[in-house]
Amino acid sequence: MKQCISAFLLFALLFTACSKDEKPTNNSSRTLQFEISGNYTGNIFASYTTAAGGTANETVGTVTWRKEITYTSGVSAAIIAVSGNGGTVGQQVTVVVKRGNTQVSSTTATADNSGSFSRSAPVVVF
Image 1 (spheres, rainbow, N blue to C red):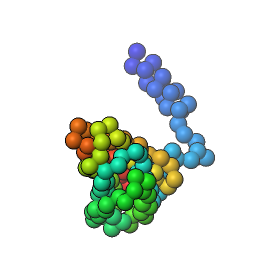
Image 2: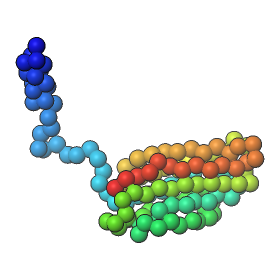
Image 3: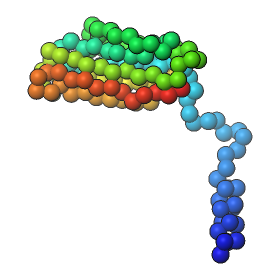
């Protein structure tokens, strides 16, 4: 029985292995694009990882905002968080993160009863 299982696993491994010509599916770009959009009418704030690995806080002037950052080799991960106040219940903000022009996440925040929200996008690991 053990020989049959071993033979099956070897057979499965041989026929599911990748060829050398296949391109990797992970994106190794160190450039991220952060995009904020939506219908939120209040004040929006963004906090994100800088190119050198620090943190920057920025007031988003309009609901359509874009920031592109190329990270240094010493930075192992990056994130963006958004918050807002002074909006109306149910208004939304969407944060899209792209890595090398390929979308890696989309996160939507909805204003609560006080017209506020706070939300972070998933961490991008380099």
